[in-house]
Every structure is written in structure tokens, then in C-alpha cells.
Length: 396
Image 1 (tube, rainbow, N blue to C red):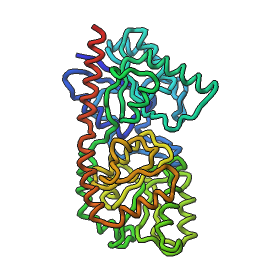
Image 2: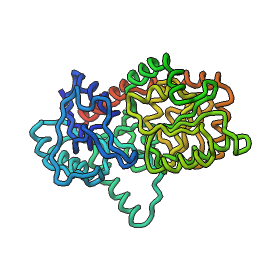
Image 3: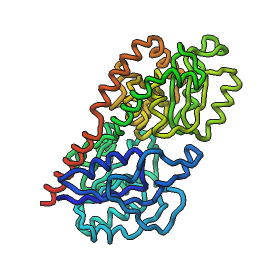
Image 4: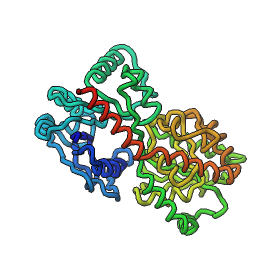
């Protein structure tokens, strides 16, 4: 049996169900090594509040929290973990799987693994759309990637852009394996279905007129997410820039730009713009079911797992061309649209075109369900098995 150690910064709500699935497999064993214990709650600077996820993060798989020299907020340096090499040797691991290669502790873990003859798999979110460097920084970046491609034996691509990025930094095609970024599809699909019977009740709770379509954004209300682009695009849906647009616009989240959104809504006098605050994992499916159209207008987004979530509720989706999941999950004219990041006019046009016909939105939502059904933990499992088989063959 192949013994795999999985190193990740902290417990992540999206990963927990996948780790439980991997722990059940008979052909390999999994031990998760966490850099920090945030299961009891974490201060999230993006949301600007303390977050405690309402889904189990540590159940159903073997795990350990690594000791650290430096604690505090999670950064590329903190926590600085130690003792990884001893644990790799003591556990008799065949493979070290790293999630995120820019953390100092993870780089040290890669070196420790290679010294002990342990194969290394790397999974990361990068797609390079925001990389605009030159001079010494560019040379340092290239040197680091040369080191990474030499030290890592396999790379797990979360999607098309991530796969292409690995190829650009010099990773051979034979060492890249598809392990797509996925969520627990059953969790979101079942909860969205269950929420449908009280959809109108939720409308009334939020004081939303039953005949008005609903546009939803869910995530951190920060500049990188492009929330102001969405707000300005929404204002363009007004016939005269004074009367309320027909759709309602909901922001489920919190963050630095919440006050700007609320000030815009107050100045306009429109009651159709609502900021709902942070919503936890079990609360989101009801909002996904409620909305007619979901928009993720990020100026840069490594992936955008919220898109996976809302597609499981059968909804049409608009994303910017800087959202990593776009090429894989959003098919223009089929289940949504893609617009140039930061272009409020283009986003307004895309929103107006989709909101014009609710039957079109319904049909696009059905296509979203079909697409996301093939982007799941099953594909992750197949990709991980393929990578492990490759590592085993290369070791012989």
C-alpha cells in the first residue's frame, strides 16, 4: 500500500469531504499534516471577522497538527513549522503531497522529502494571469520555478489555466495530472433542493418582491473580487440611472468594501441592493436556490469554488475572464457568460442579455447541473490514482 502524507496550511472547509473520501480508499493510506489548527475559528482579514465554519473539518481522516516556531496570522512564513522531516521518516511515507508551494514550511518539507527519497506531488492554484514582473523579481521567480520543477515529481492541475501555467514554467506534460478543484456536489445539490420548498418564504424574509429576478454575489467584499464593478454594472440596468433596475442585487458576504456598497445603495435610494453579511456553508445553498443569476466579477481569482457551489443549485453564471474556473465551468451562451474583468459596461450587457428571458436562465441552469456533475471528487480520485501510479513506475 502506498503511504501518502498530505501537507496543507490549515483545515479548509472545501477539502474536508475530499480528505474523508481519500481516507476510505483501500489502495493507499493518507495522513494529513496541518501547519496550523484553525478548526475552532480563524480571523479572516478578507471577511474582516472571525470565521468558524459550520461543517465538520477534522472528522473521518487521520491528521496531525505540526509544531511551529512562529504563530499568528497565516502568511507565506507563518506558521513556521518544524519536525516535518522526522515525521516523514517515522511514518515511512512513499509520497509527500503539498498543497500550495509558496509557503516557507512547504518548501522546507519538499527538501526534507527529497533528502529521504520520498516522491513529491504539488497542487497549487496559480494560473499566472496576474503575474507582471520584470528585472530581479522575474529572475528570482524563474529560479524558484526551476527549483520547483526539479524537486517535485508530479503536479496536480486544478483546471485548464493551472495546467497551462505548469507547462509555461517548464513542467513536462507527462508529470501533470488532472485533479480538478471540486466541492462536495451532493452536499450543495441536496441542500439547494431541500431549500426550494421555502424559497418564497425566504423572499419574504428578505423583503424581495416575488416577480423580480435576483442577482447574487457571494464571497469577500474586497477590491480583488470586483464587487464595485458589479455594483456599477447593476446601476447601468436602470433605464434612466435614477429608477431602480428590475432585478434585485444581493451581496452575501462581508469585508472592507461593504460600507462602499451600502453608501451607494443609500445614495441611490434603491431598496433593491442588499448586503446580507457573512453566510456560512449550510446557509448558502438556500441563497443559491433563491437567485436567478450568479455573478463572480473578480479582478483576479485563482479558481472560484463558489461557482462550483452555485452550479449545483442549477443556476446560470457570469464570471470575469480573470476567474480561474471560467474556461472549465462557464460556457458562454450555454450556461452563462464571461466578460473582461473590470468592464462594468460589458458586465451590464451580459447581465441584461441573460435576465431578459427567465426560460433561458432556467435552461442555462440545467446545463450548469450537467457540467458540474462531471467536475467532482470522483475525478479527483482518478487523477490522484494516476499520479501515484506514475510515481510508483518512475521509482522502479
